[in-house]
Image (tube, rainbow, N blue to C red; front, side, top):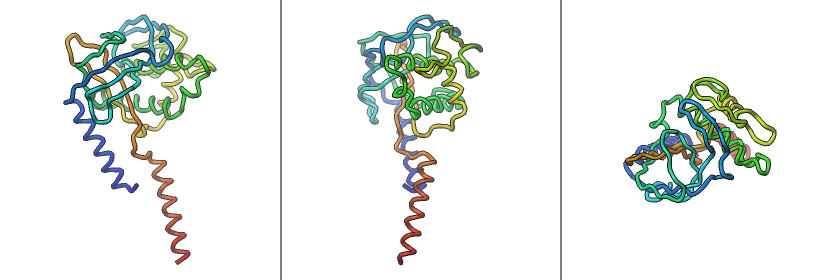
Length: 234
């Protein structure tokens, strides 16, 4: 894939993402992605309860989004119930929903977790802990400006903010993600509730087919080597 093809693919993805907001669809939340969520207690906004990713089904959105998906909450002022279908959601790009800085930080975080295979690496029985740590890290990016769950405007008193041998804690995730290059390997979107009363907005993502810069460089070297070999044989 050459640079112009990559540019066209990226432009097509951007156009598709921008057009999604005009199409309402239905979101049905089924259960927790792993386990039953873990208890946390956070500040600003205050919340005491379970945290982790959710399993949901999307319908009516089009654009390749319909079907099963994992979601993570990006705001704590609303709620929803499992087993209920909510028909008043739209999908918007994370870049349009958040500030540019927060969207980039979330992109790095998703790249760290998904690109690093942390759920597969988490010890048996600890994948729900990894999910809770990821949810806390997402909330910290949304509500705070630092890279720790121990201080700042948003903080947590649970045991999921710090590292553990069996999974990566929320503060560890944030600090590792801050050192990571931005991750073009994943597109980030927000399921945005537009009904009344509103329900929790949710972060989702999907892998993009546009190669990362490192992959493009390797492909370029391979093509160059092949061309050189052809010239030598000619």
